[in-house]
Length: 118
Image: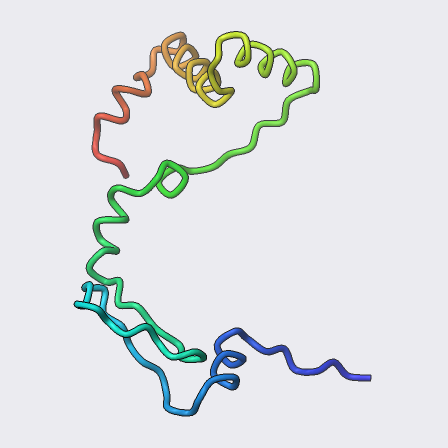
């Protein structure tokens, strides 16, 4: 037996609602704008806010992620230190990187962050 075709959310919503096309909403707040009728697809124009969001995004949006594999006893010790110091493991890892940079003669995280990002 063949599988039925996979539907996307837009086509399901469009099929369930009244015929009449889509409506485009502005990012500007309208005075007492009417909410879209059930089943309509609303597209927001976010071009103006994209530029400011790119500069001031969250750490998760700005940063590069990397994984560190730790043996269970090492992980447990790091977790215990974070708990005892009432801090997060992430902060301890950044502190460890700062100490490594200092030991190797590299610039600190604070000095690197003061420059323009790449």
